[in-house]
Length: 359
Image 1 (cartoon, rainbow, N blue to C red):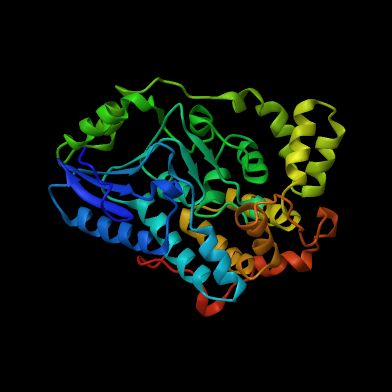
Image 2 (cartoon, rainbow, N blue to C red):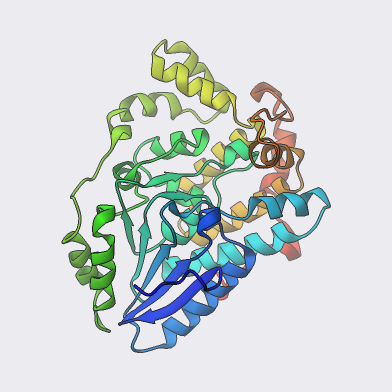
């Protein structure tokens, strides 16, 4: 591969028959900015129109990960002054997430290292999702007073049993095989084999089918399909099958096991309001047919979060001051009322999220 160190935050170029999209902010673990979303969209325009491009490969620069998420600090600063970055960034990001899922050419995401938040949105909706032994995938937004967005509610609601509810509410990290079990990924390929896989993908000629791409990837894969979380499935299903956060907490309290108590401690660190909103979004997503419909619902909720003290406080504690001691409002799950939650699910008129194809 050609060196890209001197190039911009996003590298988009052809290598052989592949359209390469490389996130290129390695010092920030490739956290994505609004301009990078726009650059990805423009790259997809060019690659879709080019008959010599057989497929897309998404990857991250550096050794640490594909993408640590969105530019949270910029969103926090805009939220503090009641700016409109949230409205603009999430609209463009969510439209891009939906485009990736429907992209007409095979789209391969190499999900090595850290893959979180916005990075999940760019990769887990792909047709071909490759993880490694280094993958650390998470949707940790509830710890920021937020919820799993970028279509996270769509993905998590389609995980087996209550595995998605567990990951969405706790923000716990999946390894590569966990991600396959949770339906966030398709194949584990050792990191050491990624350069060879990359090279093989650049040689896939136009007209190569998705089934043929699957076969190519399988030639490098370990065959693993489930990680540590699969062994906990029965217990997780029992605890997280409830439709109210108070009942989930009660189920965990009633279980004296170390795992239940550790899970309870983790939930105790999250935003009570964020957890209640997340659980409702996940339950609604189960009965929602399309990613676009989930994104519309997420966008409504995201704009409400952007205006909330919990978001600013969560980001302050985790990213700005890093004291890991957020003061949530309200501080207890039992104090979260239906009236507090209703605005997150209300239609927003002229600001509604719409997609270019009209959906």
